[in-house]
Image (cartoon, rainbow, N blue to C red; front, side):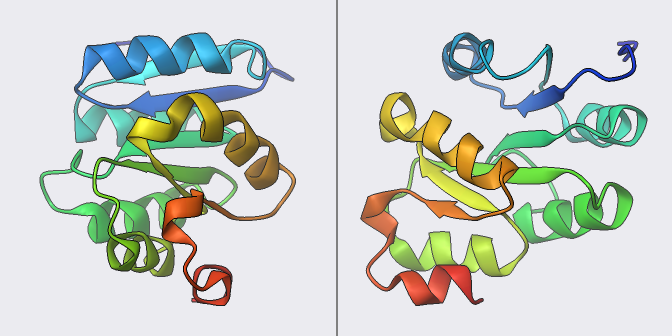
Length: 145
């Protein structure tokens, strides 16, 4: 897959193996980003992120074979300008807290994508952080990992 983008465009990368979610995410994000690239494997995500330096990377919690902590650390090292939202099926606040502590800028519960994704994108692109309400038992834990 060749990654190309014109200068001055904003782009996002969607990394998920579930095509139903990718299609849904693509539709939601079309209003915010000039270009949206989708990937279904870790190597493509890392290659694309390095080439494009996307404004936002949206990745499924179970996406990486080496685990989310390793993937988040690699992304932060390789493309520190990019922000990251992790999508999770799991509504356990401890999982979300750990994911944010590992370097994610936001965590969105997959069942709340329709309500939470665009507010998460807005908050994160403005320099903030975001966690779906079900994860926010104690907001201080998410915003000060």
